[in-house]
Amino acid sequence: MKASHLFLALTLLSSVLHAADYQSPYKVEFTFKDEELIGDLLKGPRGDWKDEASVPFRDWYDAANHKRWTYWGPSAKQFSPPAGLATKSPEWSRQRVIAAGLRFVGYSYQHHHIPDWEPPADWPQDAKQTTPVGKGLDCSNFTAFVYNLALGIKPSGGIHEQEVMTEATGPGTGRTTPAKRIELPASYEDFEKTLLTSDLLFVKSNKGEVSHVVLWVGKIGKSPDGLPLILDSTGTGAKDSNGNEIPNGVHLRPFKRGFWYASKASHALRIIPEGK
Image (cartoon, rainbow, N blue to C red; front, top):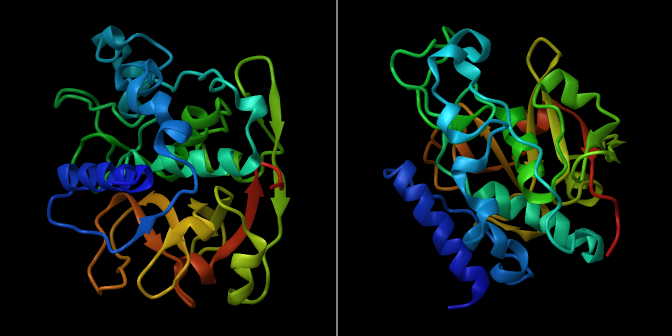
């Protein structure tokens, strides 16, 4: 089994564990081997879910934090840059972001700062939460956490702060990375020419305000009908290429002509610069 296919299998297994009744028709074909791309996440301490937060795991559910954290839970830690980041190509960084994001396929949509925060029944609940309480992230905390985990670059987790940011903290502490605004094309066909893998694509609500953000998967995404793919955390409603409803939470989803993602797209931000 090729390395990229092995990672695909692990990703699909994660999806089965978290959403057993759904089989996605979409996949991602990386041009780097798993060990090179995310070996530290598969085997090393960077992939330890108990080390996601800015506080030790033993304090995650301390009752003293009820009022301070409410249903959001602890904030994410600032990850250090992965080893050798300065020598890696922009394409490696772009693909690593998507690979890191796919580790959470099947996690549900939750107003949390870190993916593995799972508050007990006696913890404050979000009155607006429409999905059962469990592990998961909302859209902008998902994109922020994935960039942080993958590259040590930590955007704001708030959607309104994230959509206007001009720089993000990192890689690591004491540094910042520019965020370049990308204006979107008028033509649906030109989205694939304009956007690069891992670009943050922001989407407006019907009221005209930015309310959602996704990761653009780009040329490494594969769908049976040739549609571009995005990776995000959102509610239910979208249907896949087989006509099946995609569950809420983190999943690959199609970027269809005329549908919400395309028709309400606002702008994009590019954190990883152009380059080969």
